[in-house]
Length: 310
Image (cartoon, rainbow, N blue to C red):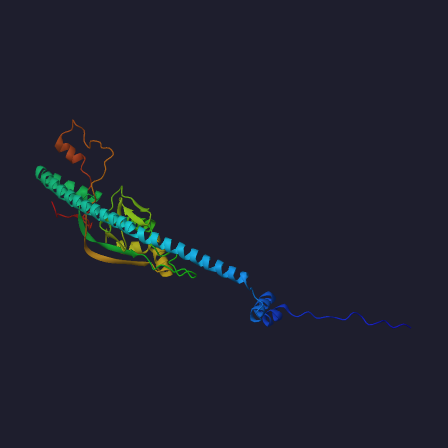
């Protein structure tokens, strides 16, 4: 009977994480620190070379930083001057545009007065009704005002900078509001004082919203004149439901209120693309007036032409 010899001795390797926490410093760094303490570091020309290289590197970095700072300071007046010039030009153009707009309104009112004086009473009244329906005349009546405004910007969780604002009012939001008001029975609509017509456009250009190519800024107020059920019908629309959800989730400001005696301005003169005569040249004026007279607004309608400026 033979007995087996002792087996190989079992060795236990230390746990990696335990060893890492016990000796966090690399052995090479430990040896270098020990050499410096013992005075075995670079000596003589090696130490001098390291010091010279360090000083030259720091001097070169300081020189480059000084040049960059000087160029930045020298270029700042030019940039500030150019920025100030652009701001001045923008303000000048805005002032000129406002003056031309006021002049155009005055000329339009003068033309309307002369036109009404040349027409008979019934023809002038019929024309004012048509202008009220098409948006070319100021109107007054009861209605609603829908107010929307951008929600607060959500800061980035890492950098702290302003991130994507999901509660921002978009051009399609104003489009949806206007379409929902038309569907609810609105007879006249304006956005921040810009009257909408059958050819009006609401679109985005960069970060701005344009209504008939005129910029509008928030908060946005969509005013509409219509029947008494206008507010209730609009609140039940899909557009109102979506905006309420966005307001609840992303902080957009959204509100609807009834307003008595709204006054909506007239739209700018439209760009006519074509025109056709409404009556035959051979027809008598009296017969043409009777046969081609359009239907006037109903008696219960809240839309009425405003007499101001006529």
